[in-house]
Image (cartoon, rainbow, N blue to C red):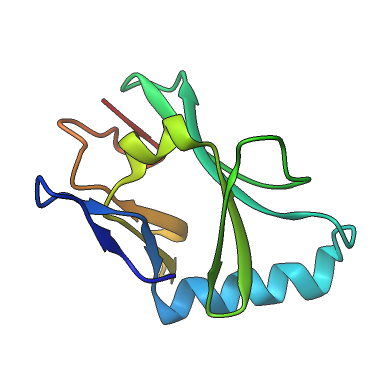
Length: 118
């Protein structure tokens, strides 16, 4: 997906690092989601900082924005794009952190686990 720049100068969209792309492709091969399913990215209320990230395989819903990032089909509800604008998703395999990490420029606070933000 190419990032789009709105008139205000805020980047719209999500980017994936090569590490995230590799891990998502591994998950796709392992989990084998249904043919009509794609990776859904979004946010929901909860977590220790106010919002938590959605990262799951799901079927498209009416109104979803559908992107293709490095061959990975991504679904995002339009309201969630506001919270995800400019977010980079990475995957780490280190001793101190393992999993998907979100670098979200819209977050004013994050929790220690990196899975929720405010």
